[in-house]
Amino acid sequence: MTRLSRDDVVKAVDRADDVTIAQIIGTGATAEELAEAQAWLANDEPMINDLRPLAQGRVRELVDILSELEEEEEDVESGPAATAGESG
Image (cartoon, rainbow, N blue to C red; front, side, top):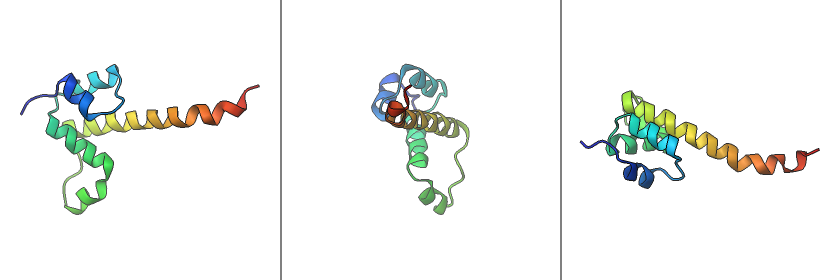
């Protein structure tokens, strides 16, 4: 299995900045592991129902990185609108 390249990460992860891309590549993960991490984030219930073990190792690292990215995106999306009327 081949480790992820910058192009692989850019194609798979929308709006990833350079730091996040470097973190993902730094895990040494493969495209398959990145896809598994994204599947866990998208909906973990079917994977648990399939009796799959919880994400571990590089997949767990990727889940952590991607979930942090999602949290940052949510903060950015809600930030300006929520603070627009609070000036003063």
